Amino acid sequence: MIKREAMENNLDFDEVEFFIKKYNSLHRNFELMQEVLNSKQLKAYFECAQYLKYVLIKTEEGEYIKKLVSANFCKNRFCSICNWRRALKYRVILNNRIQKILENKKVKFIFLTLTTRNVYYLNLKKEIKKILNAFTRLFKFKRVSQNLGILGYVRSLEFTIQKNNLDYINLHIHVLVVVTPGYFDTRKNFYINQREWAKLWQKALRVDYTPIVDVRVVRKRKKSNYTAEELAIFEVVKYILKDTDLLLLQKQKKVYVFKELYRSFKNVRNLASGGILAPKNFKKKISEEEDLVNVKGSEVQGKIVGEVEYILKDGNYQLLRFKGEENECKKNQNRI
Image (cartoon, rainbow, N blue to C red; front, side, top):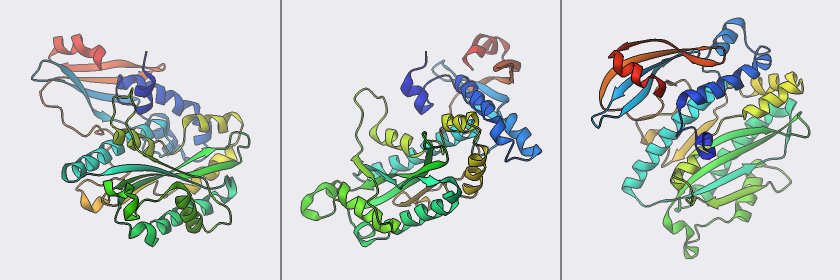
């Protein structure tokens, strides 16, 4: 049985199991997607990840490692499979950036959640622009931009459906903020508490109410195998929309809401970073159009002993063909 945390973070369990899980989500939402995609796009969406090709690598230690080398991804931003693959890619890129920072200086992290009042679906496009402009404004305020305790950030825009009224959407921004250890020294006046963040966010949003803001120091969980930074990254780069929300819209026949969601998020930059985490400081940039096959971030060293191809049929991946060192492939095909 897959452990809950492994399932949530999509890292420590058999990859094909998750391909099946995500494909089932994709298929359940097919009725919604046919309202917004043309026939060519719909075909690509419906056939996403039906073909997978792995190489089987025998390491110097004698272990067998699988590596995905080819797949037919549709790259639609509302596709369950492609969103999962993007999240994996973003995690690796951001974790690598953070590790490089940690090699050169001591830093700490805070996790900031910025919210607004729920938005009527017809106003969504306007409100997306408003919240993103407000975030840019927030980090240009002197209290933030000239704060020597704040070094950089990565932010993501996420939304959820209001369960008791599906015509309303909750927009919110998750921010992982890199700070100096001295940020928490009250004598230096760097520290911004929750109440002050809320006031700054209200000013940035230009609203007459106090929005809900949550701010907390990033700490490692006792029973987790992941570092505090990795857990924070998992939260920042979650999927743009939960599969369960899409399914709820479909069950309640809220196609008109989904069509507006799809239209409103077109060309919206869901993930952005600045300061010490800005792309200009690193070779690899984050782009939604990048390769969704090679997302793990590290090359496996060893000898390729076989290639195994799978095709999805009747809700499960079936062996299509293999080649290479036949005994090794047969013996290890259930690992892939």
